[in-house]
Image (cartoon, rainbow, N blue to C red; front, side, top):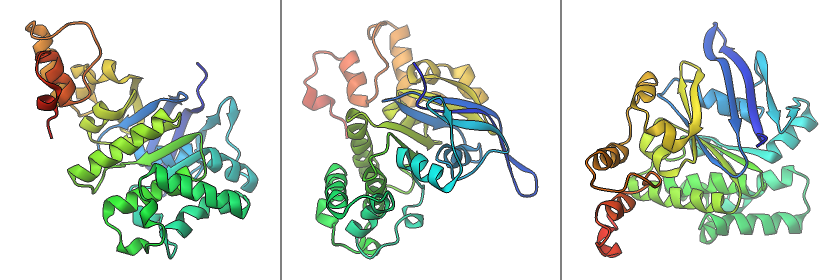
Length: 286
């Protein structure tokens, strides 16, 4: 399958010769959810800024399909219409007087007509479950609500690919669970998602594919189940398998659940493997 977005041998250093990316190559497949997984300082945020054209590599190239990204004004507008980025801190991205005005900023920059922009904004607000916040000033919102507004602003541009930098950072468990549910829904609608995280549990819960990061480069990229069950590979990235995966692998080794079948994504799914006769209501662990 041809990648819809890819990085080829990227190199980048910040002023003062501080290295951020080195020999970095990565592929993003259409309709998949890719986790950029690694410790803080590994270069994940820098990569996302390259993937939407905000930073230009000092060596190497970013490709949209089979075409290299164009850094002209027109090229960047087209690029960011296809590849939208949501920053880690929503306050860095939200600036308008009301939620609706903020979400409309991207579509207006695309040169769309007023009626089309209104429809895009309404659709994005409904998709994120925040239509009731349309007239609210952003500074009066909770952290989780602000995060949804920032994502709605990106979704309103109808990008092919949505990049999210540490999407659950700063959210409590309930807010994180709500956001994960929204991201799943966007994936089900066909949007390609790429998110950076140091939280291996989030990658295990949400990602189809994983790219393991360490020291500004990709150690490995592949299906989430293959990488997240490889303890030696994870250790090279300074990580260990998620607790749920550890429990699942131990249960399989002891014959407590079937050897065949996909990796469970939730505690409820693991309990279903261990106790198939247990009523689903009892497996719904909160």
